[in-house]
Image 1 (spheres, rainbow, N blue to C red):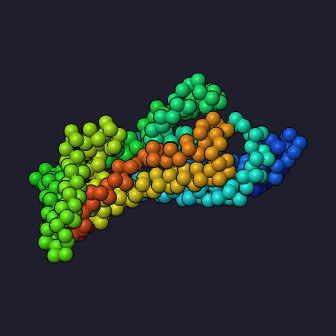
Image 2: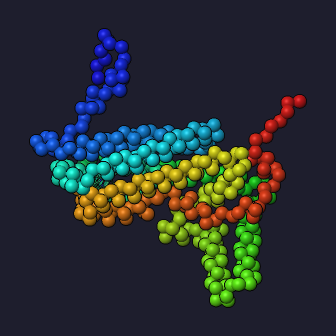
Image 3: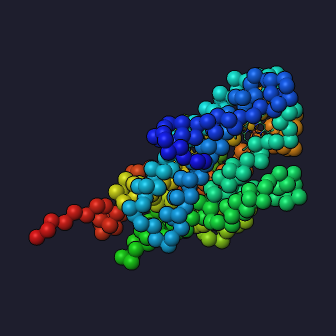
Amino acid sequence: MTTDITRPLSYGSYLRVPELLSIQSPKSVEAGREAHDELLFIIVHQAHELWFKQILHELSSVGKMFASNSVDEKMMGTAVSRLTRVTEIQKVLTDHLRILETMTPLDFLEFRDLVSPASGFQSVQFRILESTLGVRREHPLLANPESPFAKSLTADELKQMHSAESSPSLFELFEKWLERTPFIETNDGFTFWQEYQNALREHLSRDRDFINNHPLLPAEDKAKQLGEVEKTENYFRALFDETLHQQLVQQGVRRLSLRATHAALFINLYREEPILHLPFRLLTLLVDMDELLQQWRAQHAIMVHRMIGIRVGTGGSLGYAYLRATLDKTKVFADLFNLSTFLLPRSSLPSLPQNLKQRLGFVFQEIP
Ligand code: HEM
C-alpha cells in the first residue's frame, strides 16, 4: 500500500478498512441473483480466519517459550496470559456460529450450489491450528496428496501446512516440559509416587471397609460394589507400571508419557504450593482449549445438521456424520482430562516433607 504523505494516519488507512471491506464477493451477486444471507456467510468465515490468525500468533509464541530445554520461570505468567487470550477468542468463535445460525436452511439453499466445491474443510489455518496443538488426524482426504483437499491448496499453503506438521506440537512441547518437573523425586529419599501409592491403598481400603460394614447393603450389592473398587484398582495399576502404561499407549488409550502423567498429577494434587500455581493454571488452560475446541466442533456439527440435514458436504465428506465422528478422536489433552480419575481428596494426600515444602514455597530471608 502506498502512504499518502499529505494526510495524517487515520483509522481507515491504519487498519486498511477500504481493502477489508472490498473483499466480500458473494457468488450470488456475481451470478446476478443476490442471496441476501451470503454476505453473512462470508463475513462469519472471514472473521474466523482473522481470529485463527490471532490464535496461531499466540500459540506460536508460547511454543517458542517451551521449545528450549529449560523454560524461564518468568515466561510462565506470559504463557498463561496468552493461552487465556486464546480461550477467550475460542468462546467468541462459537458465538460466531450462532450468528450464522440465524440463516435458515432454505436461505442457505439460495447460494449453496454456487460455493461448491469450496468447504471449511480446506481451511489451511484450521489445519495448522490442529497440527500446532497436536491433533492426530487420520482422515484419508487429509493424508492423501492426490485428494481434492490437497489439490485445492496452493504451493504456499502446502508449504505452510508441512512446516506446521513437521514442527513439534504443543502436546509434545508440554509433555517434555512436564517430564522435566524436578519435584517428583528428590535426593532426600522422598519419592512422591511411593507415598501416593500408599495413600491410595489406604483410600481404597477405606472404601472397602465402608462397603463391608454397611448395615443396610444387601450381600449382592456389596459384592457388586466391591467389584467396582477392584476395577478402580486395576485402572490405577497402569499408573504405576511402565509396561502396562505402554500397552495402553499402543492401544491409543493413553498418549502422554508416564513420567509426564506423574508430573501433571503432582501439579494437580499440590496446586496450592506457590511454585505450582502457574503450572497448574497452564494445565487447566490446555484442558480449557481442548474443551472449547470440542464445543466449537459440536456446535458446528449441530449447525451443519440443521442446515443440510444428512446430505454430503461440499468438501466431499459425509457431512454431519463425518463431523460428529471427529469429536472424540480429536481431543489432544485427553490424558489431562483423565487425571481426575486419579485424584485423592485433600485429606488423604501424602503430606510433603518440610524441606520439599520449602522449595515449593516462596522463601523470604531477612538480610542480616
Ligand atoms: C452454513 C454453514 C456451514 C455449513 C453448512 C458447513 C458445512 C460443513 C461440512 C459439511 C463440513 C464437512 C466437510 C465437507 O464435506 O465439506 C465442514 C467442515 C468444516 N467447516 Fe463448515 N460449514 C459451515 C460453516 C462453517 C464456518 C462458519 C466455519 C468457520 C471457519 C467452518 C469451518 C469448517 C471447518 C474448519 C471444517 C473442517 C472440520 C474438520 O475436518 O474437522 N464451517 N463444514
